[in-house]
Length: 295
Image (tube, rainbow, N blue to C red; front, side):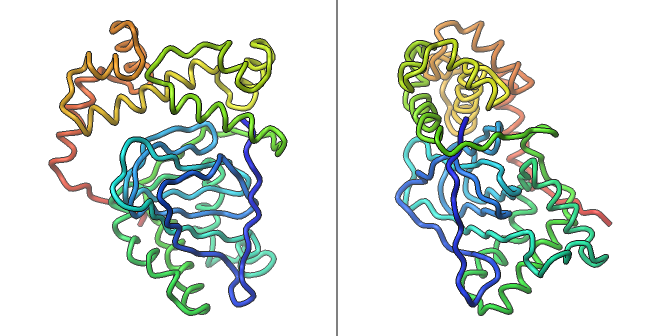
């Protein structure tokens, strides 16, 4: 999948970029840029794409991505109020050439290395730094820089996180294919409840079925129908958490014509049966999550 290149702009007074992103709906295409990025979702929910990872997101979602790692957040369903996020972007030479090699920054150096795979921090960690991140846009330049370093130092010591892409995931950058790939994303998002065929998706981007299959598998490291099933299971897991719909209703609502096939796919991607997933989430939701930190 080809992502759009995004050129970040910073002001003469600041060595990095921070802004409050407030829109009716997150509609940015799958894109990449040479800067590191930390994104805190303040209000919105949907599906987050980082590299070849796909997960649900909600308010409090805190994710760091490394340079040139494609990513985007897309809303699903109805979202009350504006979609809001604080976005922080900084270059590798934030404090000058070689700054990250200094011994004081070794933990942050490790954090930045891990961000090449994308990092999702747990809600407990996000809660601890949320006020700091939200305060960044209003701070004067020097306190803003010091606050960013405090945030990075804190995150570098947090043990509760998830790496989003498998190690070794690489992305061949090609701006020209951006429109083609985002058409596929949009088509799946809008039609996952229905039957989706290779012929219709390939035709959408004016490619033969064989050429499209090679293209998609090469970029995403997975076939189109694996991606489609992952999207359907992602939406099914969201329904299991947020509604009291019957399991069969959810399966049919997510485009599965065969319930046994839905159960097999859910177990394959989620690691457990749908009912077990719902019960596990509700048990976890009863207890506050406790963060763990490296000593």
